[in-house]
Length: 466
Image (cartoon, rainbow, N blue to C red; front, side, top):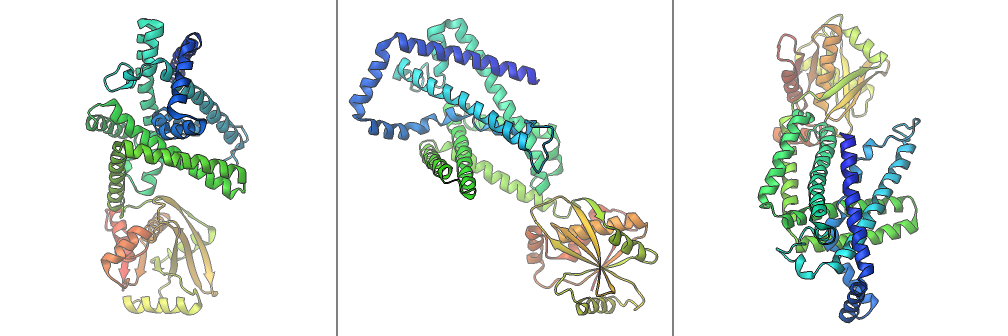
């Protein structure tokens, strides 16, 4: 497949090179073409500064020609680098990625400048109008005009194939990126990790977009140009910020100027061709809605990938497993002896437990609530010479508690009990706190996660609330 792709790209670039060289040859041999062009520029605009200003104004027209610069980013994960590269220091990958992007940018810049020039001076203006022979296919027009219909037909076929390949590579990029990130953050269901369902989804979206734009090349081109410009504009701003943080004053000014140009180009393109913003806004709204529904639907899902206990934590769990393992969910405040003593006394009083019962405290600290799936690392501590505490860091308190209880049950073969206080406040507000920030109505949510994770009531860890 890679060989076919490389061959296809090579053939297409070769055919384009033939058309460009032929066009440049025609420009050089037909001397009046250049003189007519320069005369028209001088007569219409007067001086060089006016020409530059007009060039900046019409620069957004070339937005679609910038397409391709952004696709280099999709292949960055495939750059191998050096044998000694690590995730922390991928020096070889960074170096080779710079070479890849620089080479691609140089090739595309040469093609873009040359093709813009030869098509401007060799093709009559009226052919670019709607319905004209060069509308949307300027290079194909030159191929037929100067190299014959046989070569022109070959060029048309290669263009169709390369456009298909570009769409396929874009889909491959999405299939590589989306299943890796969206389900991880709860923004897509589990089946989004599978390739085949996502191929069907993306294909249906492609047909939907084609239908919405009535298969109009100009309309779809405007939408695509908007997407390309937004991507390049955001990248230019990001590089400017990175250069500023690195203290590179010259690069900051240079990239800042480029960012301003692309910001202007994006705004003008949006005003002239609002279809791109409309379809983009629809997609963004759809993604946000689906992501919210997905996170809501997966709110009670056990999403801890694995549980790791240090030696002390494992010993605590095995110590209490000789009888009924009893855990107290505690929200750490001062972590002084009085806090743990009062908590234990309250739990005993609320649940009518004798003073001989043994407890282990569990304290969960919320790290990043957006990290929907993650592993769980549990550490054991002995505080004030008598209180055993399991400390956990997680994106969600109920999920961490449920996962730890299930792990303790599987490790010891004994069903554990966990004790909570009722959370003060409005239940709906507490659920929103849990949904957005991983905290809130802890006890009922923990019980619901356990219920969904373990259908057998006789094996499900017991939840007590006082």
